[in-house]
Image (cartoon, rainbow, N blue to C red; front, side, top):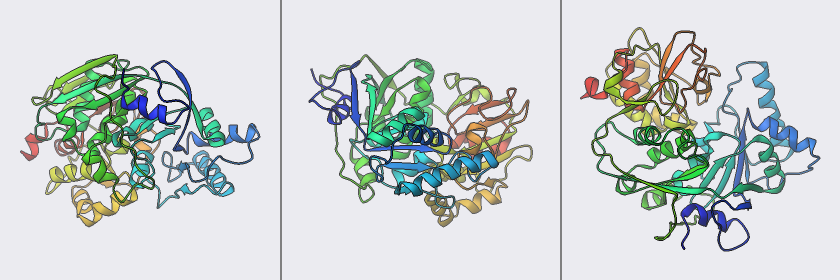
Length: 421
């Protein structure tokens, strides 16, 4: 029997020619990383264990993106711990404020992850890099500490699920709508510890940014990882960017999947996840009576240049509703710079929108967009659990950038066609 793309990548990073679902393996990593919340714990455990040096200073990344620019003394202390560790061990991939971006957009942008890689990060959304044909997954901080020292990670080989999408997407529909649709259909535990493989004609025609969005939210279905088999779109993204040779794997025709789902999404419209689960998904029209206090466009899920272009297309020549606070967060400095060149930042400012330096801040209720009791936010982020963006009695609705921008104009959840045609 053949192997899935996930099994092939894991086998290539272990001893032996093949792996089987359920097998426990110790695998070599191509890159491991942490942020200003998770890495300090890993650093503490690394030093507590008495390790004198990291396994490879070129294959570790430290990304201070969650509470930076520092929001308080505790955040500043955590960021300082990253900075000091990076200097002590000559970590090559460390970015200071002014250079840093949100990790799951920054690392692929910088060419640090690519097809065939095995990547682990101390952040649950580390599954994002499956968009370029890598096996990537989140680990705990103690696992990261061990990886800092050994360059290996202990894993159980996940079973694979196949998701086949067919049909041409309608206007204003993108990767966020596809993954919300998927989570709604299978539930937040429907892919528990499984590799979610996204394929089919719709995916083959999907831009790389939308693939990042889909793989980013695999964890919201309980997935161990998300992955898109690499193709010409992947090659174009990685060419001239990737800092090492790509290895292009594909699933065998006789590979085994624990489940296969096939959906024609040609009739799918924009989707919105209502509180308090990413699976509580509705067509946007069903939530048009939901008034908003805040709209957030950005994050590791939808803060890339294509997302900002969609938002600017709708906001151009319009103003945000006077009752709504609107925050735009370009995911990296390069994306911010590109948005400046294209005039998108001016569009946002003319629309009376606040534009922030790259940060995860509001996504986790950290800073720069925390909600008070009774407030509602519509956000292009990835989670809407209670307290996710602030007070226990606040609410977060999830959507793509088109719905977010249109709703910013009207002050309530709105189909983009109502604003921009």
